[in-house]
Length: 313
Ligand code: RIB
Ligand code: CA
Image (tube, rainbow, N blue to C red; front, side):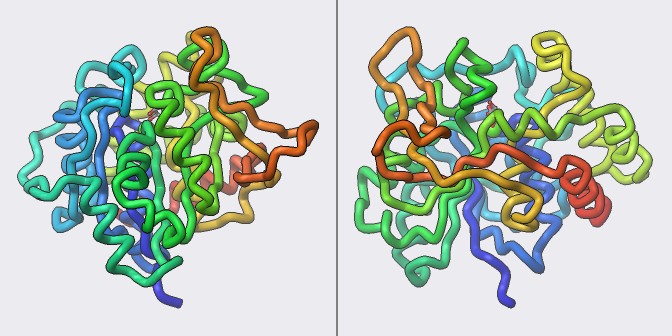
């Protein structure tokens, strides 16, 4: 079977980095048409630099990386250096990338790719704020029905918020963009904190990366060692939740996950609950189901897949 065509939209971030490595380590299943970067965890110049560092670490310097939006559609950018560090990839010392950034804007790449590829053959994998995706849909509404699936990391229901009491970071940074995406009519699969908080980088799992004896394994171990501070302090958890790799793991082994097709709306008005994903998990409204909202995962199966793939790099 031909590999699935995907565009990864990202704001690297240590967990984004692991997701990108997982995708680039799986060429039989996934054809990464391009990586589009967005401002989020850190400002755009850094996310654009970090994406290229990650591609070079994966041994894939020919990957096309496009810079996108440097701020949300209507709001001031909120970043997360408190989680990811000043560079966005704090932990190990990293060389600056040699590979060039593409000159085309990320939004143009998304629009042109969806128009050029056959309808229903390109999957969008947003793992940061949804600004690039929403901007593409605003500028070219004709591409929305051409999307095969949107598999995104964002939102929360039982886990509620990680940046405010009610909102998850990716949705909170650009709630208007999220509203556009969730109303687009494209098939959507959501990896919320409800599931990502179940894939924690416990010490034995981090040691497995270190024991690989490869540069990629060492980097993943050092990134997760840095990245886990925030969640350990806040939640007292046994490690860092590997949020973004859940999106790629879904594409590789969907049977690892379970969830419900439900209605998900985005709060864009209330200052108190801005960016909340109002997920009708118990189907108490008659609002149409617009997303497969994932709630559970086989965590050991997830790490077995991740470790086997990272070992290939
Ligand atoms: O809330 C977690 C999400 O916010 C992840 O995508 C992480 O990389 C940050 O972007
Ligand atoms: Ca991210």
